[in-house]
Amino acid sequence: MVSGTLGCKSDVLVREFFEILANVVISNDRHIAKLLLPHVVLDVLNPGIKQHGCSQAVLDEVLAVLHGDPADKKFERCANFVFGLMDHLAKWSQLARARITKERNTIRRQPNSSGSAAAIDLLKERVRGVQSFLEKVPHHDISLASERARDYLRHIMHCEAQIRAERGD
Image (cartoon, rainbow, N blue to C red; front, top):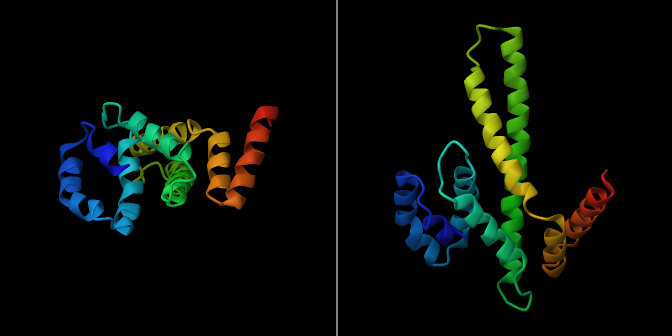
């Protein structure tokens, strides 16, 4: 997934940073990639930075992993990597929404506080970008991939979410 992100015409500093670390990631040090990938994806999903289709490239890569062949030895590891990424994005979104609420309340109570409405608006925009990305990954695909990757709790959770979505709950 990192190689797909590097192919995009994103911010020059991000590209330079990942060119330096590419040798570490290429040498199969998955721990570094696992630590960096969520932060790169958050940067790519930031609507304030023009990424020239990078968010679509990340989505395509996530869907390719979820639709992967379970007979492939790397499928389970890659699927769990994607699940971890999606969990990170969901948790970041949840924490960002809590921060928005806290900042908004601070501004209401103390109009002269250091909180900035512009900063809150920027964070809201980033949350919308992450939420939009997460909503583009179908529960059905996550459910099937999690079953094939033997992550049964996630499988049941997304089966239930899919049923609720179909019912309109």
